[in-house]
Image (cartoon, rainbow, N blue to C red; front, side, top):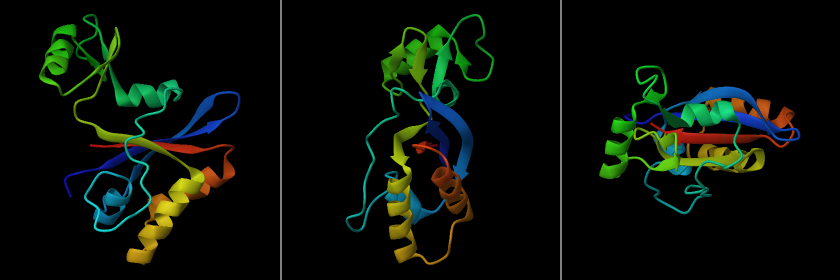
Length: 154
């Protein structure tokens, strides 16, 4: 499979706190249910929500690229010229004067615990083989207050 599902679990105290980075199994059915692939029948769809505006800074740093000519070769930093070229070609968007969307990521969204449970239930109705990473993610989210899974495809 050429796509990977990357995400981060956050939970709400007075603001969203960071819990963990999650890399879910690359599975065509799960990919379709999460909004990154074709659907053969109606399913719960939470795609096109985009990333939440109030996501934790660690999640934001994993999703966006920082534009800076001072550190163009560091992880998650790119030069202003490269950023301008990507935005001009339509593969990225400015999110601030010093940040753009990563052109390699697509279909960003997020799910509350109950929504991920609903999607996983539909998944299991089509494929009875469990997905350990999804089950572990759900187990953690059930224990956290107001948890959400922020994800995108790569």
